[in-house]
Image (cartoon, rainbow, N blue to C red; front, side, top):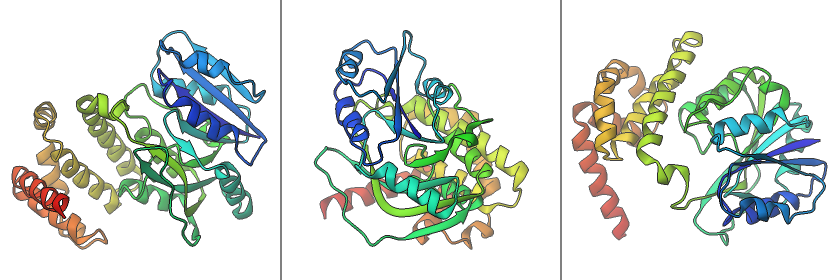
Amino acid sequence: MISVVLNVYNDEKHIKKCLDSVINQTYKDIEIIIVNDGSSDNTLKVLKEYKDKRIRIINNKKNMGLSLSRNVGIENSKGEYLFFVDSDDYIEKDTIDYLYNLCKKNKVEMSTCNCLDVYDYDTKAKDVEERITIEPGISLLKKVLLSENRKGTIWNKLIKRELFDDISFEDRIINDVVVVYKLALKVKKIAFSNKTKYYYLRHKESVVAKHKTEWTIDLYDAAIERYNYIKNIYPDLIENDICILKLLIDINNFNDKKVDKYLKEKKAKKLYNKLFSFKVLRSKISFEDKFKIVIYRVSPRFLRFITKVYLKIKGKR
């Protein structure tokens, strides 16, 4: 059996599309654990309309937040594998079947597929020729650090339940960042597929959109914690250094005064200069990334200006 963990809070607009995509999976031996995290809208009413016996609703009276409510889902799971779905996203009808077969066929503890960011429910991913690779956990860790196509997210992966025996989500806005890298350090092998099976809905009511400043600050803090944790295990892992450099560049584009002030207090620019090296510039990252890394070191404001102009020109094409 596979446990699908679905955490929801005040999402009556999207939950039906999400839950329908889970219920209609071609793989039937699943339990659907829905943690209703103190919703004050009609979310619970919508959930109770479903009569599928595989559904278990855990109704939190108070809002715990996504991270802690995910722990509740894990603690109540009985399956051999775990699969997480955000309540405003949806999956292809064969997603679980596909990922489970990847695990069994290749004898791995985790499998992952590509995801597609969408803005409406009518979007359909283009079919591509299947490409599957079996790689060690360190490979996943490097992909997570380099932010390769959602490799750092928890929700496009089928994960052996036992990997969570000593790993849990932390009580913070950012949750994937502090969990997936620990799974990568623990897992022996993982199956990667280029097939798109997960759809990530972008909208104005998402956590990132509603709490941009807080989310960004927590992202930086979590990334620094991750950097130090990995540094103790792999002191010479260049991807670890590159991750912080690229993160500061991305945050720079937000142009948020509160975030800028926070980074100044944390002496982020000093850390950037410390991590900047010719080893980074000789790495396999793109020329565009290398260019940004150099310009940021000269002037973060100038890089912000160049990026703004570039996006403006690109938008007119």
